Image 1 (tube, helix red, strand yellow):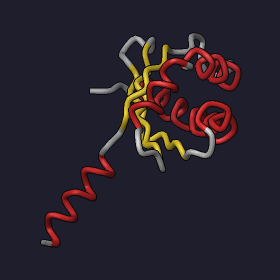
Image 2: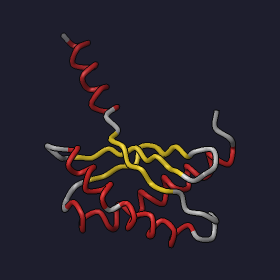
Image 3: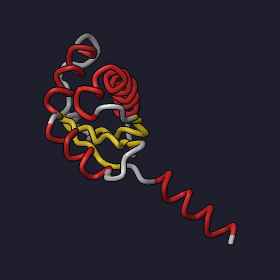
Length: 112
């Protein structure tokens, strides 16, 4: 169960990461839309797991690998934007959120 502090920090990181991705993602992936669907923070606030939805990409795993290779850049940008709210900026780990694809697949099965 998440504490109130964990929930506040995860919402802050989700908001700031989405702003960072809007401004900076074209340098890494080109014209690809990256949406931060959720963030989970560890109890000691040292690790933040960000779940991303990547669109339109034929190979989302490759795009996710590019983001994970450059996570230090994103952590620095996050630190610059959150330096007054967070004492320690958590380590970022990006995961692919395939819940939209899963819901679409269920929808197709229900229509049959």
